[in-house]
Image (tube, rainbow, N blue to C red; front, side, top):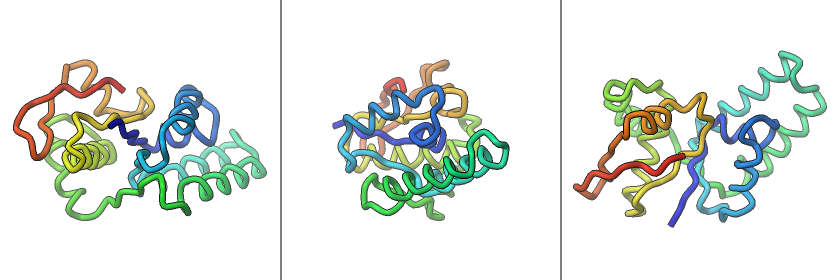
Length: 162
């Protein structure tokens, strides 16, 4: 079963049109909401991104208010998409990924969470949806044929491309 795990860049494309907006909108149209996943810190990053766009004049105050209302109604308030907490255990478990794969903290926490989810679901992979420009884990995976071990399984697998 396929799950879509959206990082902040991909999620923001849902509310402010940029490269990738069409793909994110397609994902929202086709994927059941209970199989969409976001990291709660990623939701806060979306708000930060929208504020920066408003402050830089890239979106008007009226557009900002509307996209914030849409974001809260579609992501924050409903039970789905699933909002995964970036709790202490998950953050600390991401440390080795930062060192091993030269990831920034947000990408490492997102990756740790996706690996945990894939292990819990016993799914072969959880696809990370992100902006290619910002997702270090996906870029490294594509360029290095990056391998990972699924928790609760000993066999190594290659991640599916974003």
